[in-house]
Image (tube, rainbow, N blue to C red; front, side, top):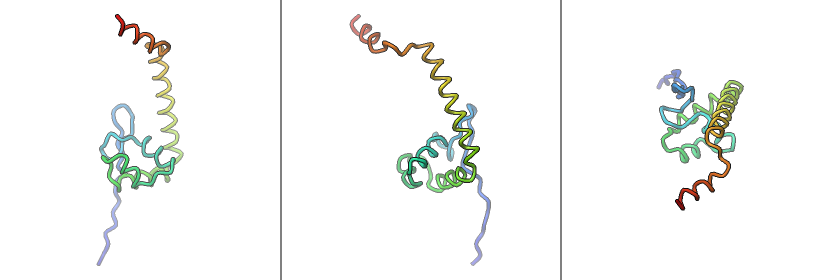
Length: 108
């Protein structure tokens, strides 16, 4: 019996916003890497995110382990962008006193 060894593509897609998602799902590379780095197994990640396929999670973990520097740079860029967006939103919508403002609206 002969075994067929083929190259398969990594199940990662970059959406128009530059976010890397896994296996055609809405689950991000960030999410899978964070869970893996917190000690979750591929099976636990699939249990937590049932839209993922086990083989895809293993492939993503393998990709991460082989390209840690690139993935870390991507994750840092994402974190910086998230911080920028948070600051913009906080400037637009001051988070201080939100509860008081909501309670005041409720009593009107």
